[in-house]
Length: 176
Image (cartoon, rainbow, N blue to C red; front, side, top):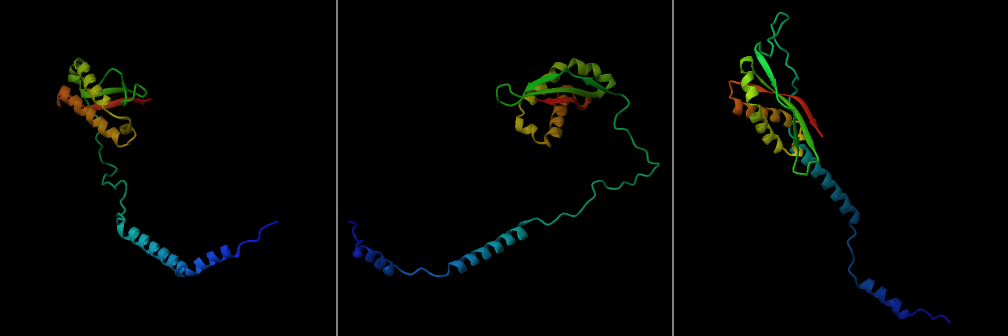
């Protein structure tokens, strides 16, 4: 036969529930106030902390060059380019997984081409030392390439002298 439920056990939870303090009934109103405060604070942050819009400027300013204006070429008449040997350099500190293949030409005057060719081993050493110190994350930055060209030009000026070297051209660049 089945036992009947004990009436004393049923009475205890009801008595404990009656003795517990009543919870405030403002649950929905509190949530609405919290949502309104969040909206106001996020609007204030965005409105007051964003910089003002910049004035619109044209990408290319209209020049005062007329149809008769003379444009000077960027390259000089006695400019010469000395092609250096191809360089293959491992990139990064990981064991030989990424390679950089580069061909560089040094810009110089035509009378100084023999000086550049004579200094080629020293130039390659200076370029290799710099390029070997570059990390892979640097190559991922698009603004890095002009800085790299400036560094290579600076090293060629240090080796050859500023009167001999007029800069460098990167004629081939392959990163694997």
